[in-house]
Length: 295
Image 1 (tube, one colour):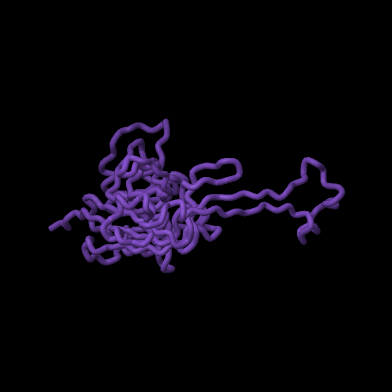
Image 2 (tube, rainbow, N blue to C red):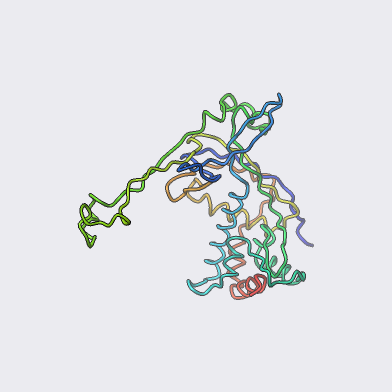
Protein backbone atom coordinates (compact mmCIF):
# COMPACT_ATOMS: atom_id res chain seq x y z
CA UNK A 1 0.00 0.00 0.00
CA UNK A 2 1.40 3.41 -0.96
CA UNK A 3 1.98 6.08 1.68
CA UNK A 4 -0.76 8.76 1.66
CA UNK A 5 0.21 12.17 0.31
CA UNK A 6 0.70 14.92 2.89
CA UNK A 7 -1.06 18.28 2.89
CA UNK A 8 -0.07 20.31 5.94
CA UNK A 9 0.71 23.75 7.32
CA UNK A 10 3.84 24.50 9.39
CA UNK A 11 3.59 27.83 11.27
CA UNK A 12 6.86 29.73 11.78
CA UNK A 13 7.82 32.41 14.30
CA UNK A 14 11.26 34.03 13.97
CA UNK A 15 12.84 36.29 16.60
CA UNK A 16 15.83 38.32 15.39
CA UNK A 17 19.01 37.85 17.42
CA UNK A 18 20.89 40.34 15.23
CA UNK A 19 19.66 43.12 12.93
CA UNK A 20 18.27 41.95 9.59
CA UNK A 21 18.69 43.48 6.15
CA UNK A 22 16.57 42.32 3.21
CA UNK A 23 17.42 44.47 0.23
CA UNK A 24 15.21 46.43 -2.14
CA UNK A 25 17.75 48.40 -4.18
CA UNK A 26 19.60 51.56 -3.22
CA UNK A 27 19.01 55.26 -2.82
CA UNK A 28 22.36 57.05 -3.08
CA UNK A 29 24.70 55.16 -0.77
CA UNK A 30 21.81 53.75 1.28
CA UNK A 31 20.73 50.14 0.74
CA UNK A 32 16.97 50.07 1.27
CA UNK A 33 14.99 47.61 3.34
CA UNK A 34 12.36 45.66 1.44
CA UNK A 35 8.87 46.81 2.35
CA UNK A 36 5.27 46.06 1.45
CA UNK A 37 2.43 48.56 1.08
CA UNK A 38 -0.69 47.47 2.94
CA UNK A 39 -4.21 48.83 3.35
CA UNK A 40 -5.29 48.87 6.99
CA UNK A 41 -8.83 47.97 8.14
CA UNK A 42 -9.67 51.66 8.59
CA UNK A 43 -8.78 52.37 4.96
CA UNK A 44 -5.46 54.12 5.61
CA UNK A 45 -2.20 52.87 4.11
CA UNK A 46 1.06 51.77 5.68
CA UNK A 47 4.49 50.58 4.57
CA UNK A 48 5.77 47.56 6.46
CA UNK A 49 9.09 45.65 6.18
CA UNK A 50 8.96 41.93 5.40
CA UNK A 51 11.18 39.02 4.31
CA UNK A 52 10.16 37.37 1.06
CA UNK A 53 9.13 33.73 1.03
CA UNK A 54 11.52 33.25 -1.88
CA UNK A 55 14.46 34.16 0.39
CA UNK A 56 13.56 31.41 2.87
CA UNK A 57 12.77 29.00 0.04
CA UNK A 58 16.25 29.61 -1.40
CA UNK A 59 17.81 28.83 1.99
CA UNK A 60 15.99 25.46 2.02
CA UNK A 61 17.14 24.74 -1.55
CA UNK A 62 20.73 25.65 -0.66
CA UNK A 63 20.68 23.31 2.34
CA UNK A 64 19.41 20.41 0.22
CA UNK A 65 22.06 21.08 -2.45
CA UNK A 66 24.83 20.95 0.15
CA UNK A 67 23.42 17.78 1.69
CA UNK A 68 23.10 16.16 -1.74
CA UNK A 69 26.64 16.84 -2.92
CA UNK A 70 28.06 15.60 0.37
CA UNK A 71 25.90 12.46 0.37
CA UNK A 72 26.84 11.42 -3.18
CA UNK A 73 30.53 12.10 -2.57
CA UNK A 74 30.86 14.68 -5.34
CA UNK A 75 34.42 15.99 -5.72
CA UNK A 76 35.26 19.65 -6.44
CA UNK A 77 35.68 20.33 -10.12
CA UNK A 78 33.51 17.41 -11.27
CA UNK A 79 29.93 18.75 -11.38
CA UNK A 80 28.60 20.42 -14.52
CA UNK A 81 27.20 23.95 -14.50
CA UNK A 82 23.64 22.84 -15.47
CA UNK A 83 23.58 20.41 -12.51
CA UNK A 84 24.87 23.09 -10.13
CA UNK A 85 22.16 25.43 -11.44
CA UNK A 86 19.55 22.73 -10.85
CA UNK A 87 20.77 22.03 -7.31
CA UNK A 88 21.27 25.59 -6.08
CA UNK A 89 18.83 27.72 -8.06
CA UNK A 90 16.26 25.33 -9.50
CA UNK A 91 17.76 25.09 -12.97
CA UNK A 92 17.28 27.25 -16.01
CA UNK A 93 15.62 27.31 -19.41
CA UNK A 94 17.58 28.19 -22.52
CA UNK A 95 16.42 29.37 -25.93
CA UNK A 96 17.80 26.27 -27.62
CA UNK A 97 15.62 23.87 -25.63
CA UNK A 98 12.27 22.55 -26.72
CA UNK A 99 9.23 22.34 -24.45
CA UNK A 100 8.71 18.62 -24.99
CA UNK A 101 7.56 17.04 -21.73
CA UNK A 102 9.76 14.23 -20.39
CA UNK A 103 7.52 12.83 -17.66
CA UNK A 104 9.52 9.64 -17.20
CA UNK A 105 12.73 11.53 -16.34
CA UNK A 106 10.84 13.84 -13.98
CA UNK A 107 9.25 10.95 -12.12
CA UNK A 108 12.55 9.10 -11.83
CA UNK A 109 14.29 12.27 -10.60
CA UNK A 110 11.62 12.83 -7.94
CA UNK A 111 11.95 9.18 -6.90
CA UNK A 112 15.73 9.36 -6.50
CA UNK A 113 16.08 13.01 -5.41
CA UNK A 114 13.10 14.30 -3.42
CA UNK A 115 14.02 18.04 -3.60
CA UNK A 116 12.94 17.97 -7.26
CA UNK A 117 9.34 17.30 -6.26
CA UNK A 118 9.53 19.33 -3.05
CA UNK A 119 10.83 22.59 -4.54
CA UNK A 120 10.26 22.22 -8.26
CA UNK A 121 12.82 23.01 -10.96
CA UNK A 122 13.33 23.88 -14.62
CA UNK A 123 15.13 21.64 -17.08
CA UNK A 124 14.98 20.28 -20.61
CA UNK A 125 12.64 23.06 -21.64
CA UNK A 126 10.06 22.29 -18.95
CA UNK A 127 9.13 23.90 -15.61
CA UNK A 128 7.97 21.52 -12.87
CA UNK A 129 6.11 22.75 -9.77
CA UNK A 130 6.95 21.63 -6.25
CA UNK A 131 4.84 20.61 -3.28
CA UNK A 132 6.30 23.28 -0.93
CA UNK A 133 4.83 26.78 -0.69
CA UNK A 134 6.67 29.36 1.43
CA UNK A 135 4.77 32.43 2.61
CA UNK A 136 6.33 35.82 3.19
CA UNK A 137 7.57 36.48 6.73
CA UNK A 138 5.69 39.48 8.11
CA UNK A 139 6.58 41.71 11.02
CA UNK A 140 4.66 41.51 14.29
CA UNK A 141 3.64 45.15 14.71
CA UNK A 142 0.60 47.40 15.03
CA UNK A 143 0.19 47.77 11.26
CA UNK A 144 0.01 43.97 10.87
CA UNK A 145 -2.33 43.35 13.82
CA UNK A 146 -5.24 42.63 11.42
CA UNK A 147 -3.45 39.65 9.83
CA UNK A 148 -1.68 38.11 12.81
CA UNK A 149 -2.23 34.41 13.48
CA UNK A 150 -4.11 33.58 16.67
CA UNK A 151 -0.93 32.54 18.48
CA UNK A 152 0.47 36.09 18.20
CA UNK A 153 -2.57 38.33 18.72
CA UNK A 154 -1.54 39.12 22.31
CA UNK A 155 2.15 39.67 21.53
CA UNK A 156 3.51 42.91 23.09
CA UNK A 157 4.86 44.06 19.70
CA UNK A 158 1.32 44.54 18.42
CA UNK A 159 1.37 47.82 20.32
CA UNK A 160 4.50 49.02 18.49
CA UNK A 161 4.61 50.59 15.04
CA UNK A 162 6.81 49.09 12.34
CA UNK A 163 8.87 52.31 12.42
CA UNK A 164 9.88 51.57 16.02
CA UNK A 165 11.62 48.38 14.85
CA UNK A 166 13.55 49.95 11.98
CA UNK A 167 17.07 51.34 12.14
CA UNK A 168 20.08 52.10 9.95
CA UNK A 169 23.57 50.70 10.16
CA UNK A 170 26.67 51.78 8.28
CA UNK A 171 30.09 50.71 7.13
CA UNK A 172 33.17 52.34 5.60
CA UNK A 173 35.55 51.44 2.82
CA UNK A 174 38.97 52.63 3.97
CA UNK A 175 41.90 53.92 1.98
CA UNK A 176 45.04 51.90 2.71
CA UNK A 177 47.16 55.04 3.13
CA UNK A 178 48.39 55.30 6.67
CA UNK A 179 47.88 51.61 7.45
CA UNK A 180 50.45 48.78 7.77
CA UNK A 181 49.68 47.61 4.22
CA UNK A 182 51.51 50.71 2.90
CA UNK A 183 54.68 48.64 2.93
CA UNK A 184 53.40 46.61 -0.04
CA UNK A 185 52.98 49.65 -2.31
CA UNK A 186 55.47 50.36 -5.10
CA UNK A 187 55.30 54.15 -4.55
CA UNK A 188 55.24 56.58 -1.65
CA UNK A 189 51.49 56.61 -0.90
CA UNK A 190 51.56 60.17 0.37
CA UNK A 191 53.49 61.78 -2.47
CA UNK A 192 53.63 59.62 -5.55
CA UNK A 193 50.25 57.98 -5.97
CA UNK A 194 48.80 59.11 -9.33
CA UNK A 195 45.55 61.05 -9.11
CA UNK A 196 43.67 58.30 -10.95
CA UNK A 197 44.70 55.73 -8.30
CA UNK A 198 43.92 57.82 -5.23
CA UNK A 199 41.00 56.67 -3.13
CA UNK A 200 39.05 58.20 -0.29
CA UNK A 201 37.08 56.78 2.60
CA UNK A 202 33.46 56.13 1.64
CA UNK A 203 30.67 55.65 4.13
CA UNK A 204 27.71 53.54 3.07
CA UNK A 205 24.66 52.51 5.06
CA UNK A 206 21.74 50.13 4.98
CA UNK A 207 18.32 49.94 6.56
CA UNK A 208 17.63 47.09 8.99
CA UNK A 209 15.08 45.56 11.29
CA UNK A 210 16.32 45.74 14.86
CA UNK A 211 17.33 42.73 16.92
CA UNK A 212 14.35 41.53 18.95
CA UNK A 213 11.84 42.09 16.14
CA UNK A 214 9.53 39.13 15.52
CA UNK A 215 8.39 37.78 12.14
CA UNK A 216 5.70 35.22 11.35
CA UNK A 217 5.04 33.05 8.32
CA UNK A 218 4.09 29.59 7.13
CA UNK A 219 5.46 26.64 5.21
CA UNK A 220 2.72 24.78 3.32
CA UNK A 221 2.89 21.30 1.85
CA UNK A 222 0.37 20.30 -0.82
CA UNK A 223 0.18 16.65 -1.91
CA UNK A 224 3.73 16.00 -0.72
CA UNK A 225 5.20 12.53 -0.62
CA UNK A 226 6.84 11.04 2.45
CA UNK A 227 10.20 11.64 0.77
CA UNK A 228 9.36 15.34 0.32
CA UNK A 229 8.56 15.62 4.03
CA UNK A 230 11.80 13.87 4.96
CA UNK A 231 13.81 16.17 2.70
CA UNK A 232 12.20 19.29 4.20
CA UNK A 233 12.80 18.16 7.77
CA UNK A 234 16.44 17.26 6.98
CA UNK A 235 17.04 20.66 5.34
CA UNK A 236 15.52 22.43 8.34
CA UNK A 237 17.74 20.51 10.76
CA UNK A 238 20.76 21.52 8.64
CA UNK A 239 19.72 25.18 8.63
CA UNK A 240 19.09 25.30 12.41
CA UNK A 241 21.90 23.02 13.59
CA UNK A 242 23.46 25.86 15.62
CA UNK A 243 20.15 26.65 17.35
CA UNK A 244 19.67 29.67 15.09
CA UNK A 245 19.39 30.26 11.36
CA UNK A 246 20.02 33.15 8.98
CA UNK A 247 17.49 35.20 7.02
CA UNK A 248 17.93 38.03 4.55
CA UNK A 249 21.17 39.53 3.27
CA UNK A 250 24.64 40.37 4.67
CA UNK A 251 24.84 37.03 6.47
CA UNK A 252 28.64 36.98 6.20
CA UNK A 253 28.70 40.27 8.13
CA UNK A 254 26.65 38.98 11.07
CA UNK A 255 23.18 40.08 9.99
CA UNK A 256 19.93 38.11 9.94
CA UNK A 257 20.62 35.67 12.78
CA UNK A 258 17.33 34.53 14.27
CA UNK A 259 15.73 31.90 16.47
CA UNK A 260 12.92 30.15 14.62
CA UNK A 261 10.12 28.17 16.20
CA UNK A 262 8.52 25.78 13.69
CA UNK A 263 5.45 23.74 14.59
CA UNK A 264 5.81 20.37 12.85
CA UNK A 265 2.88 18.73 14.66
CA UNK A 266 0.75 18.56 11.49
CA UNK A 267 3.27 16.27 9.78
CA UNK A 268 3.48 12.48 10.12
CA UNK A 269 6.28 11.06 12.26
CA UNK A 270 8.78 10.03 9.59
CA UNK A 271 12.41 9.07 10.04
CA UNK A 272 15.16 11.14 8.44
CA UNK A 273 15.87 8.86 5.49
CA UNK A 274 16.67 11.53 2.91
CA UNK A 275 20.48 11.37 3.16
CA UNK A 276 20.51 7.60 3.63
CA UNK A 277 18.59 7.17 0.36
CA UNK A 278 21.16 9.28 -1.50
CA UNK A 279 23.98 7.16 -0.09
CA UNK A 280 22.42 4.08 -1.68
CA UNK A 281 22.45 5.37 -5.28
CA UNK A 282 25.04 8.18 -5.61
CA UNK A 283 25.98 7.51 -9.24
CA UNK A 284 22.38 7.15 -10.36
CA UNK A 285 21.39 10.34 -8.54
CA UNK A 286 24.08 12.35 -10.33
CA UNK A 287 23.19 10.75 -13.66
CA UNK A 288 19.50 11.59 -13.39
CA UNK A 289 20.34 15.15 -12.26
CA UNK A 290 22.44 15.59 -15.39
CA UNK A 291 19.65 14.15 -17.55
CA UNK A 292 17.00 16.38 -15.98
CA UNK A 293 19.23 19.46 -16.35
CA UNK A 294 19.47 18.72 -20.06
CA UNK A 295 23.19 17.89 -20.15
